[in-house]
Length: 304
Ligand SMILES: C[S@@+](CC[C@H](N)C(=O)[O-])C[C@H]1O[C@@H](n2cnc3c(N)ncnc32)[C@H](O)[C@@H]1O
Image (cartoon, rainbow, N blue to C red; front, side, top):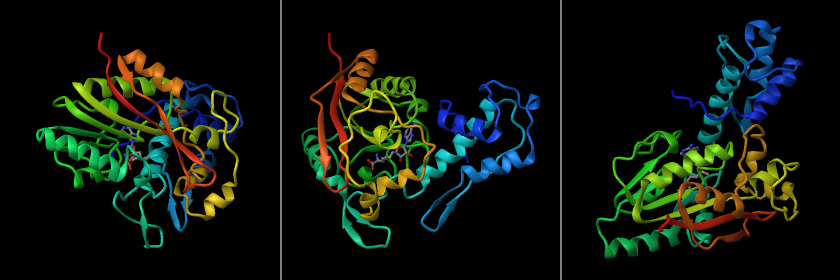
Protein backbone atom coordinates (compact mmCIF):
# COMPACT_ATOMS: atom_id res chain seq x y z
CA UNK A 1 0.00 0.00 0.00
CA UNK A 2 1.45 3.34 -1.04
CA UNK A 3 2.23 5.90 1.64
CA UNK A 4 3.12 9.38 0.47
CA UNK A 5 6.06 11.48 1.46
CA UNK A 6 4.10 14.56 2.44
CA UNK A 7 5.74 17.71 3.83
CA UNK A 8 7.43 17.18 7.19
CA UNK A 9 4.64 17.08 9.74
CA UNK A 10 5.91 19.28 12.58
CA UNK A 11 3.33 18.06 15.09
CA UNK A 12 4.65 14.54 14.61
CA UNK A 13 8.24 15.77 14.70
CA UNK A 14 7.60 17.53 18.04
CA UNK A 15 6.05 14.41 19.54
CA UNK A 16 8.96 12.23 18.37
CA UNK A 17 11.37 14.66 20.03
CA UNK A 18 9.32 14.61 23.23
CA UNK A 19 9.37 10.80 23.36
CA UNK A 20 13.09 10.71 22.64
CA UNK A 21 13.63 13.32 25.40
CA UNK A 22 16.54 14.93 23.52
CA UNK A 23 16.49 17.89 21.16
CA UNK A 24 17.10 16.82 17.56
CA UNK A 25 16.90 18.13 14.01
CA UNK A 26 15.04 16.57 11.09
CA UNK A 27 18.40 15.55 9.58
CA UNK A 28 19.81 14.06 12.83
CA UNK A 29 21.23 10.59 12.00
CA UNK A 30 19.45 7.80 13.86
CA UNK A 31 22.69 5.87 14.48
CA UNK A 32 24.02 8.80 16.49
CA UNK A 33 21.02 8.86 18.85
CA UNK A 34 20.23 6.75 21.94
CA UNK A 35 17.51 4.76 20.18
CA UNK A 36 16.07 1.70 21.96
CA UNK A 37 13.28 -0.74 21.12
CA UNK A 38 11.11 0.93 23.76
CA UNK A 39 11.41 4.22 21.83
CA UNK A 40 9.74 2.57 18.82
CA UNK A 41 7.05 0.91 20.91
CA UNK A 42 6.31 4.24 22.61
CA UNK A 43 5.91 5.84 19.17
CA UNK A 44 3.58 3.08 17.96
CA UNK A 45 1.51 3.59 21.08
CA UNK A 46 1.44 7.39 20.77
CA UNK A 47 0.26 7.38 17.14
CA UNK A 48 -2.32 4.63 17.54
CA UNK A 49 -5.86 6.03 17.27
CA UNK A 50 -9.10 4.54 18.48
CA UNK A 51 -12.33 5.71 16.88
CA UNK A 52 -15.29 4.24 18.70
CA UNK A 53 -14.42 0.54 18.83
CA UNK A 54 -11.89 0.47 15.99
CA UNK A 55 -8.16 0.76 16.44
CA UNK A 56 -6.01 2.34 13.74
CA UNK A 57 -2.43 1.43 14.52
CA UNK A 58 0.93 2.02 12.88
CA UNK A 59 3.82 -0.40 12.51
CA UNK A 60 7.25 1.11 12.11
CA UNK A 61 10.25 -0.36 10.38
CA UNK A 62 13.46 0.00 12.39
CA UNK A 63 15.66 1.14 9.54
CA UNK A 64 15.46 4.91 9.21
CA UNK A 65 18.57 6.91 8.45
CA UNK A 66 17.38 10.19 9.90
CA UNK A 67 14.68 11.54 12.19
CA UNK A 68 13.07 13.04 9.10
CA UNK A 69 12.71 9.55 7.53
CA UNK A 70 11.10 8.32 10.73
CA UNK A 71 8.66 11.26 10.85
CA UNK A 72 7.71 10.67 7.21
CA UNK A 73 6.99 7.01 7.87
CA UNK A 74 4.81 7.82 10.87
CA UNK A 75 2.99 10.56 8.96
CA UNK A 76 2.40 8.31 5.93
CA UNK A 77 0.68 5.61 7.99
CA UNK A 78 -1.10 8.02 10.33
CA UNK A 79 -2.50 10.10 7.46
CA UNK A 80 -3.73 7.05 5.56
CA UNK A 81 -5.41 5.80 8.75
CA UNK A 82 -7.08 9.19 9.17
CA UNK A 83 -8.49 9.33 5.64
CA UNK A 84 -9.67 5.73 5.56
CA UNK A 85 -11.30 5.99 9.00
CA UNK A 86 -14.81 7.34 9.35
CA UNK A 87 -13.39 10.66 10.50
CA UNK A 88 -11.42 11.67 7.43
CA UNK A 89 -13.65 11.17 4.41
CA UNK A 90 -17.37 11.52 4.12
CA UNK A 91 -18.86 8.40 2.51
CA UNK A 92 -22.27 9.61 1.42
CA UNK A 93 -23.59 12.31 -0.84
CA UNK A 94 -27.31 11.77 -1.34
CA UNK A 95 -27.96 8.71 0.80
CA UNK A 96 -26.15 9.02 4.07
CA UNK A 97 -26.25 6.93 7.19
CA UNK A 98 -25.08 7.93 10.62
CA UNK A 99 -22.71 5.72 12.54
CA UNK A 100 -25.60 3.63 13.88
CA UNK A 101 -26.86 2.89 10.36
CA UNK A 102 -29.80 5.36 10.48
CA UNK A 103 -30.60 7.28 7.28
CA UNK A 104 -29.92 11.00 7.72
CA UNK A 105 -30.07 14.05 5.46
CA UNK A 106 -26.59 14.73 4.12
CA UNK A 107 -25.11 17.91 5.42
CA UNK A 108 -23.79 18.55 1.89
CA UNK A 109 -27.17 19.85 0.72
CA UNK A 110 -27.09 22.83 3.07
CA UNK A 111 -24.60 24.66 0.85
CA UNK A 112 -25.04 26.22 -2.60
CA UNK A 113 -21.80 24.81 -3.96
CA UNK A 114 -22.06 21.26 -2.66
CA UNK A 115 -24.35 18.26 -2.71
CA UNK A 116 -27.70 18.46 -4.54
CA UNK A 117 -27.33 22.17 -5.36
CA UNK A 118 -23.96 21.65 -7.03
CA UNK A 119 -25.27 18.62 -8.93
CA UNK A 120 -28.23 20.67 -10.23
CA UNK A 121 -25.98 23.52 -11.28
CA UNK A 122 -23.56 21.25 -13.20
CA UNK A 123 -26.46 19.27 -14.74
CA UNK A 124 -27.78 22.54 -16.22
CA UNK A 125 -24.33 23.23 -17.66
CA UNK A 126 -24.23 19.70 -19.08
CA UNK A 127 -27.64 20.16 -20.71
CA UNK A 128 -26.20 23.08 -22.66
CA UNK A 129 -22.84 21.38 -23.32
CA UNK A 130 -23.21 17.58 -23.15
CA UNK A 131 -19.49 16.99 -23.70
CA UNK A 132 -18.55 18.99 -20.56
CA UNK A 133 -15.68 17.30 -18.70
CA UNK A 134 -15.54 17.25 -14.91
CA UNK A 135 -12.60 16.63 -12.61
CA UNK A 136 -13.19 15.94 -8.91
CA UNK A 137 -10.00 16.61 -6.95
CA UNK A 138 -10.03 14.79 -3.61
CA UNK A 139 -13.16 12.93 -4.73
CA UNK A 140 -13.27 10.62 -1.69
CA UNK A 141 -15.74 7.85 -2.57
CA UNK A 142 -16.34 9.51 -5.97
CA UNK A 143 -19.94 10.43 -5.10
CA UNK A 144 -20.42 13.09 -7.80
CA UNK A 145 -19.63 10.48 -10.47
CA UNK A 146 -22.83 8.66 -9.49
CA UNK A 147 -24.93 11.72 -10.26
CA UNK A 148 -23.15 13.45 -13.15
CA UNK A 149 -21.79 12.36 -16.54
CA UNK A 150 -18.12 12.46 -17.47
CA UNK A 151 -16.57 12.75 -13.99
CA UNK A 152 -12.94 11.81 -13.29
CA UNK A 153 -12.08 11.48 -9.60
CA UNK A 154 -8.61 11.88 -8.06
CA UNK A 155 -7.86 10.76 -4.50
CA UNK A 156 -4.72 9.20 -3.00
CA UNK A 157 -6.35 7.29 -0.17
CA UNK A 158 -9.68 5.98 -1.49
CA UNK A 159 -9.60 3.34 -4.21
CA UNK A 160 -12.99 4.40 -5.64
CA UNK A 161 -11.05 7.21 -7.34
CA UNK A 162 -10.26 6.92 -11.06
CA UNK A 163 -6.72 8.12 -10.34
CA UNK A 164 -5.41 7.02 -6.94
CA UNK A 165 -2.86 9.76 -6.37
CA UNK A 166 -2.36 13.17 -4.76
CA UNK A 167 -3.41 16.32 -6.59
CA UNK A 168 0.21 17.34 -7.07
CA UNK A 169 1.15 13.93 -8.57
CA UNK A 170 -1.80 13.81 -11.00
CA UNK A 171 -0.77 13.91 -14.68
CA UNK A 172 -3.90 15.26 -16.38
CA UNK A 173 -4.62 13.51 -19.71
CA UNK A 174 -6.71 16.55 -20.77
CA UNK A 175 -8.05 19.92 -19.56
CA UNK A 176 -11.32 19.97 -17.66
CA UNK A 177 -14.26 22.37 -18.07
CA UNK A 178 -15.37 21.95 -14.46
CA UNK A 179 -13.25 21.16 -11.43
CA UNK A 180 -14.83 20.19 -8.15
CA UNK A 181 -12.42 20.76 -5.27
CA UNK A 182 -14.16 20.22 -1.96
CA UNK A 183 -11.84 19.60 0.94
CA UNK A 184 -8.59 17.97 -0.24
CA UNK A 185 -6.31 20.91 0.60
CA UNK A 186 -6.73 21.19 4.34
CA UNK A 187 -3.35 19.86 5.41
CA UNK A 188 0.32 20.77 5.71
CA UNK A 189 2.05 23.91 4.55
CA UNK A 190 1.57 27.00 2.38
CA UNK A 191 3.96 25.63 -0.26
CA UNK A 192 1.98 22.37 -0.31
CA UNK A 193 -1.08 24.47 -1.19
CA UNK A 194 0.99 26.25 -3.84
CA UNK A 195 1.75 22.88 -5.49
CA UNK A 196 -1.92 21.90 -5.25
CA UNK A 197 -3.06 25.22 -6.76
CA UNK A 198 -0.50 25.00 -9.58
CA UNK A 199 -1.87 21.59 -10.51
CA UNK A 200 -5.45 22.82 -10.26
CA UNK A 201 -4.63 25.64 -12.70
CA UNK A 202 -2.88 23.20 -15.06
CA UNK A 203 -6.00 21.00 -15.14
CA UNK A 204 -8.50 23.84 -15.71
CA UNK A 205 -9.64 24.62 -19.29
CA UNK A 206 -9.19 28.18 -20.54
CA UNK A 207 -12.87 29.01 -19.90
CA UNK A 208 -13.29 26.47 -17.14
CA UNK A 209 -14.66 26.97 -13.66
CA UNK A 210 -13.58 25.44 -10.36
CA UNK A 211 -16.00 25.06 -7.46
CA UNK A 212 -13.68 25.30 -4.50
CA UNK A 213 -14.49 25.00 -0.82
CA UNK A 214 -12.56 24.33 2.35
CA UNK A 215 -13.27 24.43 6.04
CA UNK A 216 -11.59 27.44 7.50
CA UNK A 217 -11.92 27.04 11.21
CA UNK A 218 -10.13 23.71 11.48
CA UNK A 219 -6.92 25.49 12.23
CA UNK A 220 -8.43 27.52 15.01
CA UNK A 221 -10.30 24.65 16.55
CA UNK A 222 -7.48 22.17 16.53
CA UNK A 223 -4.48 24.46 16.90
CA UNK A 224 -5.96 27.01 19.24
CA UNK A 225 -2.69 28.78 19.90
CA UNK A 226 -2.03 29.46 16.22
CA UNK A 227 -1.59 32.91 14.75
CA UNK A 228 -3.28 34.04 11.52
CA UNK A 229 -6.46 32.27 12.50
CA UNK A 230 -10.01 33.57 12.43
CA UNK A 231 -11.75 34.21 15.67
CA UNK A 232 -13.60 31.13 16.77
CA UNK A 233 -17.19 31.71 17.81
CA UNK A 234 -17.14 29.83 21.03
CA UNK A 235 -19.54 27.07 21.83
CA UNK A 236 -19.45 23.73 23.47
CA UNK A 237 -17.21 21.18 21.80
CA UNK A 238 -18.53 18.55 24.14
CA UNK A 239 -22.01 19.25 22.86
CA UNK A 240 -20.82 19.03 19.27
CA UNK A 241 -19.18 15.72 19.99
CA UNK A 242 -22.36 14.31 21.55
CA UNK A 243 -24.41 15.54 18.61
CA UNK A 244 -22.48 13.37 16.20
CA UNK A 245 -20.83 16.30 14.46
CA UNK A 246 -18.43 13.97 12.78
CA UNK A 247 -15.73 16.52 12.09
CA UNK A 248 -15.13 16.65 15.79
CA UNK A 249 -13.71 13.17 15.74
CA UNK A 250 -10.76 15.01 14.27
CA UNK A 251 -9.98 16.04 17.80
CA UNK A 252 -8.79 12.51 18.41
CA UNK A 253 -6.49 12.81 15.40
CA UNK A 254 -4.34 15.36 17.13
CA UNK A 255 -1.25 14.96 14.93
CA UNK A 256 -2.76 16.10 11.64
CA UNK A 257 -1.13 19.34 10.60
CA UNK A 258 -3.96 21.55 9.36
CA UNK A 259 -3.63 24.46 6.99
CA UNK A 260 -5.74 27.52 7.78
CA UNK A 261 -7.72 28.58 4.74
CA UNK A 262 -8.66 32.23 4.95
CA UNK A 263 -9.61 34.78 2.29
CA UNK A 264 -6.04 36.05 2.53
CA UNK A 265 -4.55 32.61 1.91
CA UNK A 266 -6.83 31.86 -1.03
CA UNK A 267 -6.32 35.29 -2.60
CA UNK A 268 -2.54 35.17 -2.32
CA UNK A 269 -2.19 31.59 -3.61
CA UNK A 270 -4.49 32.25 -6.58
CA UNK A 271 -2.49 35.36 -7.40
CA UNK A 272 0.78 33.40 -7.25
CA UNK A 273 -0.39 30.72 -9.70
CA UNK A 274 -2.54 32.91 -11.99
CA UNK A 275 -6.09 32.10 -10.98
CA UNK A 276 -8.90 34.56 -10.45
CA UNK A 277 -11.08 34.34 -7.37
CA UNK A 278 -14.79 35.11 -7.49
CA UNK A 279 -16.81 36.33 -4.55
CA UNK A 280 -15.83 34.59 -1.32
CA UNK A 281 -18.66 33.31 0.76
CA UNK A 282 -18.86 31.76 4.17
CA UNK A 283 -21.65 29.61 5.29
CA UNK A 284 -22.36 28.96 8.87
CA UNK A 285 -23.32 25.37 9.02
CA UNK A 286 -25.90 25.38 11.79
CA UNK A 287 -25.78 21.62 12.14
CA UNK A 288 -22.51 21.76 14.02
CA UNK A 289 -22.05 23.32 17.40
CA UNK A 290 -20.04 25.48 17.62
CA UNK A 291 -20.52 26.76 14.09
CA UNK A 292 -18.25 25.22 11.53
CA UNK A 293 -17.58 27.61 8.71
CA UNK A 294 -16.61 26.89 5.16
CA UNK A 295 -15.05 29.22 2.64
CA UNK A 296 -16.63 28.91 -0.84
CA UNK A 297 -15.27 30.41 -4.02
CA UNK A 298 -15.51 30.00 -7.79
CA UNK A 299 -12.07 30.06 -9.43
CA UNK A 300 -11.29 30.82 -13.07
CA UNK A 301 -8.21 31.28 -15.21
CA UNK A 302 -6.78 34.78 -14.80
CA UNK A 303 -7.22 36.71 -18.06
CA UNK A 304 -4.95 39.65 -19.02
C1 LIG B 1 -12.79 16.16 3.61
S1 LIG B 1 -12.65 14.85 2.43
C2 LIG B 1 -13.72 15.46 1.12
C3 LIG B 1 -14.18 14.41 0.17
C4 LIG B 1 -15.12 14.89 -0.94
N1 LIG B 1 -14.47 15.84 -1.83
C5 LIG B 1 -16.39 15.49 -0.37
O1 LIG B 1 -16.65 16.66 -0.57
O2 LIG B 1 -17.15 14.75 0.31
C6 LIG B 1 -11.01 15.18 1.80
C7 LIG B 1 -10.57 14.18 0.75
O3 LIG B 1 -9.32 14.65 0.21
C8 LIG B 1 -8.47 13.54 0.01
N2 LIG B 1 -7.09 14.04 0.01
C9 LIG B 1 -6.26 14.27 1.04
N3 LIG B 1 -5.07 14.73 0.63
C10 LIG B 1 -5.16 14.82 -0.72
C11 LIG B 1 -4.27 15.22 -1.75
N4 LIG B 1 -3.03 15.64 -1.47
N5 LIG B 1 -4.69 15.16 -3.03
C12 LIG B 1 -5.94 14.74 -3.33
N6 LIG B 1 -6.84 14.34 -2.40
C13 LIG B 1 -6.45 14.38 -1.11
C14 LIG B 1 -8.81 12.58 1.15
O4 LIG B 1 -8.47 11.24 0.89
C15 LIG B 1 -10.32 12.78 1.27
O5 LIG B 1 -11.03 11.85 0.49
